[in-house]
Length: 181
Image (cartoon, rainbow, N blue to C red; front, side):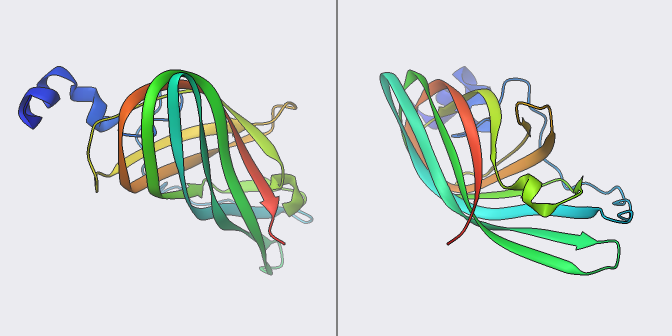
């Protein structure tokens, strides 16, 4: 089967390549809106980082993607706080999938919080779906909302540049942000 035939039969596969997060996602595009100035005792924070990992499923399986990043916050006095963090995407479910993700860039929307440590925890990403064709160097951009049990959440964008694999999956995912040692 040729590449042209594959794309005719699977036109959405390349659009949601490797790591299409959450059913019904919108394409990720940098926000152009202005970030509101933090009020007294508030911080405007953003999370960014680089991750890599793998997804393996034969019937049942899972996905583990990890890396490092930084939570960058600005307070009402224009003072900047940077917190080095470890990042993780961990999930499990069903599918047939063998994929290696060599580079995944993440960046959050601006989040206004009373304390930067509010972002250091685990968040649910919900059900995710993905498909990979044998390919490398294919880009993909998606955005998703992460949230915790209390309902606190924010948007995060995933941009991939380098992946190799074959398969499809449906996983329940958790997004972890921990302080780096």
